[in-house]
Length: 294
Image (tube, rainbow, N blue to C red):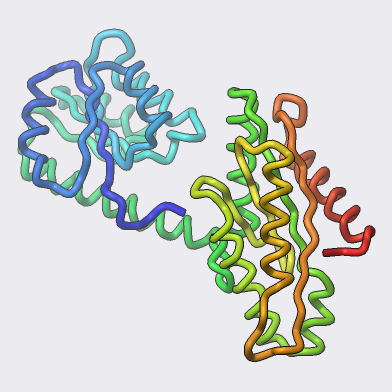
């Protein structure tokens, strides 16, 4: 999960080197990282790869102009949410209207007042940070602190797309804590909550930084494991299974918890949809449960 305290990245898109030098000097003490692009194509590539927090975009550039660059940014799913402040020497209302209709956040005319521009940048970054915090928290499970099912769908779609481009393997794991209802009935819901929270901690400890753990629902969890073949993913699941099985519970010494796992590993060029991946991992999970669980 991304940190809310990360330094924001601002992408300046302008064909005039003096603008880059000016803002590089004037913003160097601000809490941001300033990146440079000198044309529309370069800006689109950087925006897609690095997902900046804000884009400062000149309208009048050779090749792809600012309006076309803005239009393309707002057409792509991975850049549509990036706020854009237009920088332009044009004061005509038509340019302003078109810019806002295409999705610009703000419009600043050149020559700009640097303190005013700094204030507009800070305001835009503040709004962006708050919106991202709200969006992120809406996708976090309140009990375990893991991502929830909504995030699973978004992240799995992105990883499938990445696997299709690269040809790298992708693994999806479905995990189910065995006989969880019986555990709740025997030891009470506080014990069940403790088990869910502990299992989440085990997942976080075992997964790599770029793996994704989600609470799928109830006692069921999903793991997205990019660039991992079947043997590596099965090894990961076995470590998790062993850890939860051998866990001792100080407050519930008689409690024993086990989990079952279903692994789907493949090339996303042959299994395209989210539903295909989840269905395949679910089938493997139910095979594990039918074979005796744990």
